[in-house]
Amino acid sequence: MAPLITWFGDDFTGSAAAMEVLAFAGIETVLFSDVPSEALMARFSGAQAVGIASTARTHGPDWMRAHLPAPLGFLHGLGAPILHYKVCSTFDSSPTSGSIGTAIEVGLKVTDAQAAPMVVAAPQMRRYQAFGHLFAGNFDGVFRLDRSIMARHPVTPMDEADLLRHLAHQTDLPSALIDLEALWSGPQGALDAALAGGARVLSIDSMEPVSEAAAGRLLWDNRDRLGFSVGSQGVEYALVRHWLEAGVIAPAPMPGSAGRVAQIAAVSGSVSPSTAQQIAWAEAHGFKAIRFDAARALQGERAAEEIARAVKAGVEAASQGASPLICSATGPDDPAVAAVRAVATDMSAANEMIGQALGEILDGILTATGIRRAVISGGDTSGHGMRALGLSALQAIAPTIPGAGLNRAYGDGAHDSLEIALKGGQMGSEDFFGWIRDGGGAR
Image (tube, rainbow, N blue to C red; front, side, top):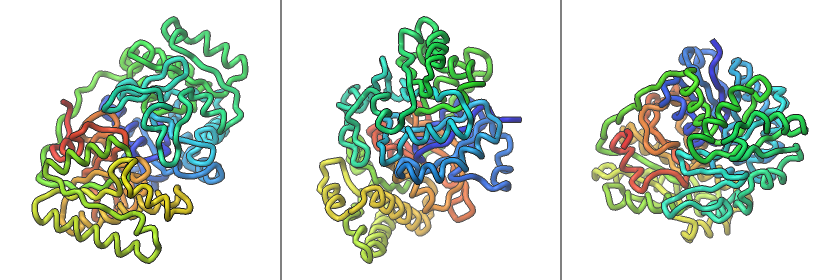
């Protein structure tokens, strides 16, 4: 039987966030770290939702045109009526890095869909879209995207909250907006008019349950011609809300906690202020924050030495009863951020190296200590870190805040069945690291 939905994520934390929406709705779901082998696919043969995570957000258009068709073609070939290209809920992208416009062009060609509906807002995560403009919430309130912390993103700073204006720098495809008024009154007419006018990208507002359900219904009722969608886990939230209302799926109980453990190990490559607050909370509650000197590690021969130093410090912290937390920075104003910029000639390559190094550090700490629960903080860091751990698949096992649940990971190496949470930099409660130590679970 064909899945209900497939998705391809442009980073690992976002891919896992889409997975948990579906899994916690009672849909058997699996997320792979690459196109799976036949043997690995057979291990999850009952899955009704199948995803593949990637690091596409860190790459340019040429890489995307070369590397996206194969996994998108694999997922499309599974026969699901909707293939979702999953992007960050803060629309992280630019013409040169993680171009969503390029991804849409490739996806439309692979699937032969008439147009790509785009649902980026996810109200459950305090991401709201009104009349084409995206708003994001953090610890301090809700802000228009170009006036939020995303305006200071080190690779893809946002200077425009109107998503179609932002996207116009990445693709020449004609577009249209289906706004809140259309969603509240019935959006089918607006959709038909947009398609008749030649629109290939359809930005869809979402603010609250009524508009979210209308967006989900629009995607599902038009899946024969809109089989390729783009957006955050807002796509899954909207579809699940509609599927529940339409009886496509039955209500499912929310999973509980996975149980408290004495220690976890964590690494963070995020420079978000939110992550900085989470690290500060962790330091006051049984975690040992250990700095990873990323600038030093970027200087060639010093990388292995810096990785070994961090592993040793993490193992020592664990031997003293603390949960080691290796971090490359604590917020955007940390001098470590400027130090990395001073030595990096290519920030995308530098971020990849930092993510890989943090993954190697986590691997070393887990191997030496036997700790079986971990956190990787940072969207770009998570993808490289997962691969450094040799992990090939994830299934969600316990919720925390939407988009950052606890998962069970699978791979051929020593870390098979590791419990791990992947957290985007802007995501999570202040006590997130402690919540994962406690096993997650709804509050």
